[in-house]
Image (tube, rainbow, N blue to C red; front, side, top):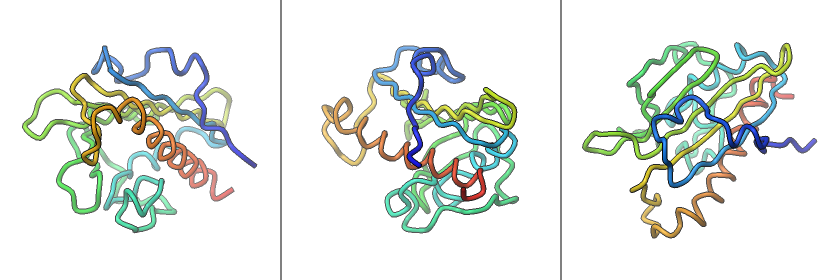
Length: 185
């Protein structure tokens, strides 16, 4: 069965936790998936994300050094707080910093510039309970003015290539989280 990771119109247009961090983004991408498990069973998969941790649940050959993302909840990675790092790549000393966390509700990550300062990108994972035993996982990435395309791509790629690459990776991640939280179904 093909599952949708398409955000509903109101999910794309309404304010989500962390949006105030970058109030005037140059780009905003929102995806979502319905997971047939309560928030408390989806939340642990978010807490352990990060390369060299449990992985990003996407294409491991790209973002986890070819190591498979975890297929189980790892108890040692279930505590995370503001200021902690979720590395982009294995062995990296940079990555996404936890900016805000509300257990079983939202996790807001930010990409901070090397010299410090406000984030140039945010990535929010919001868990909602539309029905009992069901979770809607909404993921939103936002880029600030001055955001540069990754991997040395020219800046014009921000509006053309980056959204396509992000959509492909985000889709795989959301499907991966859903499959794991639902117990492989």
